Length: 205
Image 1 (cartoon, rainbow, N blue to C red):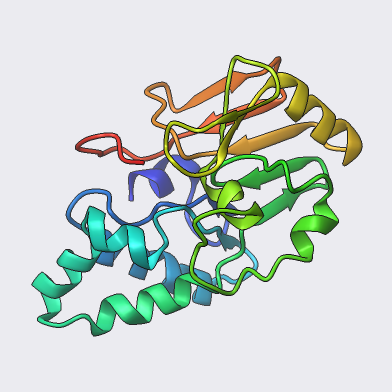
Image 2 (cartoon, one colour; image 1 turned 180 degrees about the vertical axis):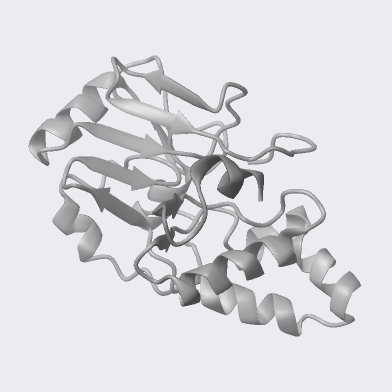
């Protein structure tokens, strides 16, 4: 609710959320329920992207599954939400200039049309372009690297510059990493990482 107090009430303000609504604290059910309700009430004002934690496998490890069992006594609510997660978009484009997503870039994706062609209505795969969009991170080293997360890649400034140039973009805006200041510019301002959560016990993958 603090976010809406700062940013402005609905429907006066457009909001774009970039994933990981669950497995964060003790109120994941309430958080994702509120976001879905707002999306239904203000469909043109609220955009909800998928994060790497909007996944059946991840939520069974990092808390959302157990939270649903504890609050409802069975896994039905968890199943309904994880089925819904399959339909969340992976990326968004603001003014044809700012490319928004949860994780980062993929060596399998050169253009925005590559993303539009993805079959995204599924559980997050362990590898491949859909996985990369939700798991990858920017890095100080050039080129592509193996991600220490065990999924996705690291990508250097040369990669983000080329992607932005080839697609007529000015910026990649992404989440996926804890940033104490709320945002962090990197790769000569080709990438910005945004973190708007006000509670996290420990950094999660």
